[in-house]
Amino acid sequence: MKTDMRRQLARQPFEEKIRKVGQLIRLRQKVKTAELNVSEEEALLESLDEAEAERVTPKLQ
Amino acid sequence: MSDDSPTIPLADVLRAANELVSAGLIEDYALGGALAAIYYVEPFTTYDADIIFIAKDKTLSAGIPAIYAYLQSKGWRVEREHLLVNDFPVQFLAASGLTEEAVRDAKRIEYEGVPAKVFRPEHIIAIAASVGRNKDLARIDQMLEQAEIDRTRLDDILARYNLSLPKP
Image (cartoon, rainbow over all chains, first blue to last red):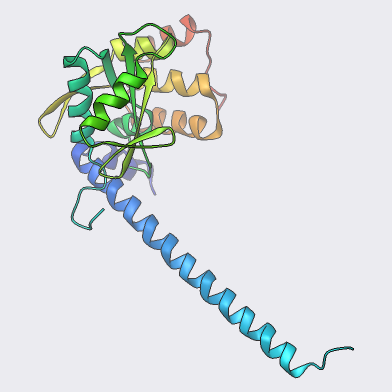
């Protein structure tokens, strides 16, 4: 972001800036939740793959 | 926290800090930390509010148990080092030395009709220089770039506390 745009944001009323910080926090929380869902899904797929591999690969006695 | 509730209940925080002064539990206070910096620069993400207070109780505890008890009686919750109001974490930190000067010299503001005080930019920079973590150095750059700084005042504070700004 350009310096003059940052300065313009800096000159906004404090109440407005605090409201924006609130929006940033909510956005971060949403991204984090989405990331968690993706990693949970990946873990589930991985465990299914492992189970499948175990099923098709004969175990060494 | 519901979607329509304010994520940062800063007016509630400041109102409570004013009540602590009225109740005689603290002498004075000011908003410090990231939220104080945001008063002067573009908004950025932060997850708590720092209230820096001058203790009435000059013992080692700085009256913190009484502050916690008062705020808990008003419905605030305690979670580790934070007090929570509407799920938003607030830290009450006792001032000393540079931070005490920052509280005494803080700028008077009104936030949503609530009178309050916020650290001046020169003190925010000096405190960041005294702490010196990477995020503090980034805050100094940001303040110097975006806030209106009284260089004479800043140089005076830095000299009195034997501090220096990082080299650009």
